[in-house]
Image (cartoon, rainbow, N blue to C red; front, side, top):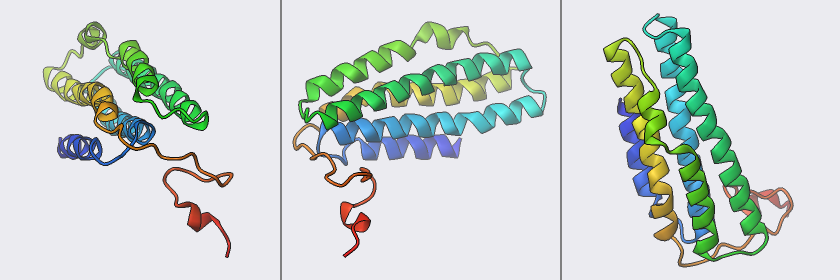
Length: 169
């Protein structure tokens, strides 16, 4: 539970850190990945402890897989937009909207049922944390669309590594 609270606090703080829609998109995508990564060991632990059945775990893993695949598509789209020089928040918001609408379904979350009430509550807490992060993606992009970040000029440069650290002087 503490990890979920830390994750949500980090997401809310990071939502205001970036200065452009690309960086905001990448940070939001990372938050989604982190939320999914937090849920996986919990599901494994519950299954190992026989607190959820294999079938119940498959339901949860299916949802997590859907979120992960959608996040990958969103991330790839954001990278393509950035590489093409797109700095308009509108394009990134469209990609985010497609991603969120594709995976954020209250009906899907409601259909995940765990027979053990305590396990159901624990699983739903993690899934609701993922839902919160998903719903924050658009807000993060909207709030961070003031200054574009140029595409990396060095082949192999990443958003997270300063270009200067990749150059040998």
